[in-house]
Length: 528
Image (cartoon, rainbow, N blue to C red):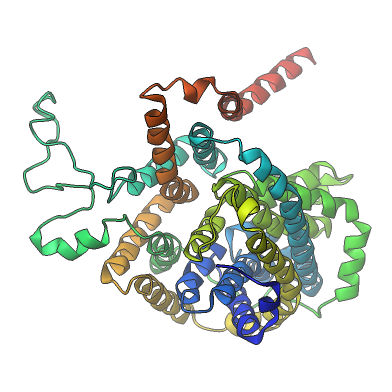
């Protein structure tokens, strides 16, 4: 797809672009309906639009939904998205004092400016990294994908073991269907092939799962055909993040929203701009922090927001006052949010490794629009790159009117009974899953992963590693097997090439760093 900059300013692009951003505001500001879900739901509908309009819509939703999650976090102390959890501290305290308008105006401007910093960093760093990435072969890409998957398990909330289990589950799901190298179906071993197993071990029966496309019986021919290419990414995402939220709501575990308490007050544009100018160092620090953390595979905007908030507190002259309604406590996390969204595109566009679940969906849409992700994109698709950058920059500008409208209309949306909101989620989920291939199999996949997502989160198991495992699994397998073919079965090139050694050393250091820091702290305490 060749994009022209002039096409972005035509009405057939601007209208769906703005409607998509309004949809992002609605989903992001509804507690539990995450930015990931907003992007996952909009992708199927974008396929029916002009490619330029569809791409602009997806990018617009990804930025807008992150900001919108701050609205219920400020008014109700319920984050609309995980990335808005830090906004429940000082933002909500300001709202309780009747200064919610100031807090949300700060949120809006910091989100737009932070996103601008992230996009500028993307425009500056991505082409330079792309030139370096041209030296990558299958061996280097293998370790890069392994690093991305491992870091997603390392930085996710919860224990490292649960993050690793989630990542392994994603890898397992990525093996369903055709062999990515040979094109053959993956067959489970026969009884004769595993005769060495002890008698008490599980053995596959004659008619039990004859291959990984899950042909359970002759009556399941349709299921087998639809799973030959593995489970579709979008139905899995909708189930994990959309239907799982409905199931949690049915269990009554969600906190009831309160119509009283915090108040908004009028929007204070000049006061917000003055506050940002008075804390310019903090804004730049937080935006850069968000961009850096967002570029780490698996980190995401939620970790970036907390990281920026924690750094702001540690560098403040009055750290003990954070959480009591400080303006600095609003600027820091919201500046990092959208900067992290743009930062996550850096490894995605250059190396094909998404920085988080939202970016993984966007990358999947890029492939659909015939945009070839990777270092060659910056060499062969110069116009495509410019258009992507232009869409991202203009989205920060369009975020201002869309965000102002969202703040004004939020009270109307939240007056709807929660039952109606959850029913709408189910309808959107079914339609979105079915629209991919007009197949009921995808709807059932969405339902199954709704229960899977509900169960995993009830056990405090992060979902981001599962998503990245599903995305990166084919890349890991392909680079490993193609690399072995090139070397004649010799695995030494995976460990002897210079860049491979650097990536492996960085991965080992990332896992050892927390323990090394704890050890250093113990030594310092003993010396004191």
